[in-house]
Amino acid sequence: MTPPTLVVEDLHTSFATDRGELKAVDGVSFSVRQGRTLGVVGESGSGKSATARSIMNLLPPGTSTSTGRILLDGRDVRDLPRAEARHVWGVEAAMIFQDPMNSLNPVMQVGRQIGEGLRYHRGLPREAAMRRARELLEQVGIADPDRRLREYPHQLSGGMRQRVMIATALACEPKLLIADEPTTALDVTVQKQILDLLDRLRLEHSMAMILITHDLGVVAGRADEVAVMYAGRIVEKAPTLRLFTAMRHPYTKALFESIPKVASPSHTRLRVIHGRPPDLAALPPGCAFAPRCRHAQTRCLSESPALSGAGDDEHRFACFYPAGTSDGEAALAANQAAGRTAAGLQLTNPSPVTSGAR
Image (cartoon, rainbow, N blue to C red; front, side, top):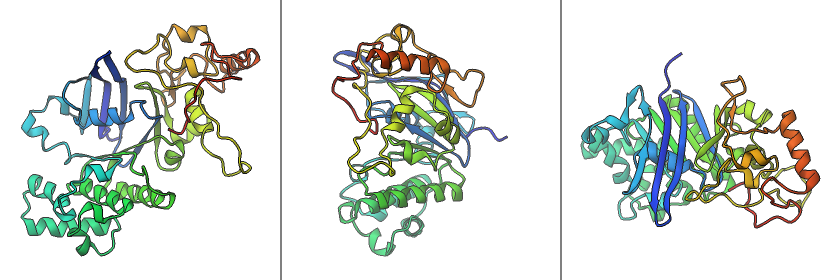
């Protein structure tokens, strides 16, 4: 078996705030192989984008990042000299951002933006870079590419701007593509077109891809493996089919239950996750999800469970009372009978809630 394109080991990223250190990423490890997709799922603030930006070295000044290793094709990119690193980020590893209107230069024509990387990294003359930019626009499905090359981002629709972002990311034929919520603010039809396009391009270019989203439904048929994040940590990780047929972490199950169901009758109330995500600058002791968890027991408030697989390395989860097990179901039944969780959240009269879908 070929070695993974990307290996991340024990990644930690924190931000200095007025209230102290905010741990955005806390000990994340994973790998992605050539031609395969890792889906990273979680609510806003769970650490998904911070993980991606840490890998791409796109963090603001004052950020503290430490990690065992970040290996891209077997090379530790954290140790590269600055001049050499410039030809890694955006070339061997590229990123599609969730808001193309803020990521594209509003005063630069589309063709020039796509061709800029080709001229800098590949040394192409202007005419050759523009020809390649035109080919890329055709490849991502933009009609009338000659016209679009001369236009500015504000003249394009949201779906077209996202396609331009994809073309820009693919310009230098990266080995790794990170798509950070690439369908945000797009309508359902355009979302499917963009996701289908990313799937096709991944296969055509044999890229490793990380697909970041808040929606488990997005990764259901598009990712080979899924990592679920909460409070800066991976709380469950498994092959996609395995995850959807045997969810073990109560947070994963709650995210899934919050997805609207087509078969549900009209006006059915959406399921939500009670409570709010934790303050990453003042994390509680024990399991970070315990105050919102329907399975939580006293132990969960004082001990933090490790990511383990109960003898299965493919399916790993961080929970003392996992869903679908006798211990987990007994804990859930006990809490339901008492109308509470271990943290005292009354299920019959919950505090302000956050939708599990975001």
